[in-house]
Image 1 (tube, one colour):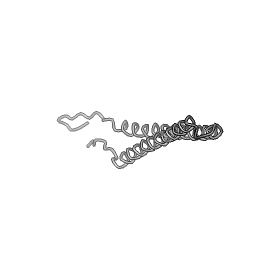
Image 2 (image 1 turned 45 degrees about the horizontal axis):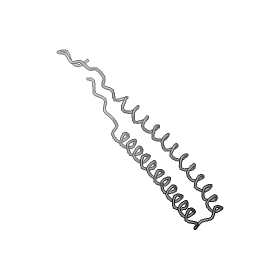
Image 3 (image 1 turned 90 degrees about the vertical axis):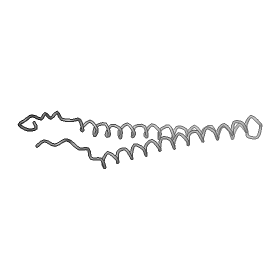
Length: 109
């Protein structure tokens, strides 16, 4: 007697959980990048107000650029990881394609 395919729900739940974690990590890195940009904006305001020297601002520019580049690399890695995990989820779901089963008076075939 033929049987219908069943999905391993616990494995799929793990994939979904990992995908959610990746999304949260992306959001965290985006928040960190925005915080760095906001901090630099405050330093620019202090420079324009004359409370910060040009040398200190130049040092800050280098530091912020390094931080932004590090966060951009992390974001790209997170995005690649999301692509990989979603590909696994897609392949697992694709394996669940229904098989054609016909029934007749003689039984299922």
